[in-house]
Length: 138
Image 1: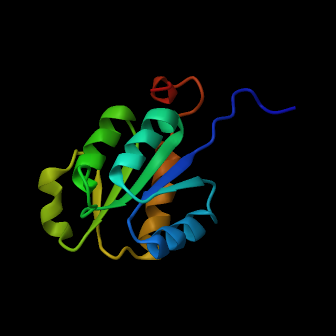
Image 2: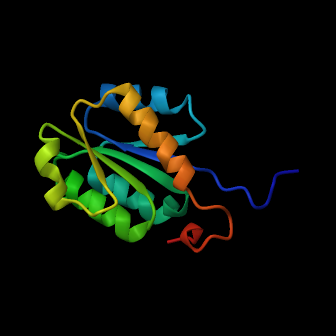
């Protein structure tokens, strides 16, 4: 019988590059996280709206094309899912902090596997348990 209090912990990976999404999915698939991938910021916002209560890690790049770039996505994620671990990869991590919510972290693009695993571990340590107000549906 399934545990009624179980909530899945999702990593949301956003990148236009299918190969980058596949690498992240394979790497994060070795953790306790389930993985959802999106090719655009707009699609990621929809996932955050529909499954945001499960998302504990958002891995995105800064330069997404379209109306929702990585910075806007990071801001939306922190509003829709308080407590989410946001990791934004950029060519200029030293300057990206100014445009991000306080909870977000920057890493160099392309990201290194160890950096992603460290952030996944941090997301799991911070993730709310069932009954925590942060686990409410959006």
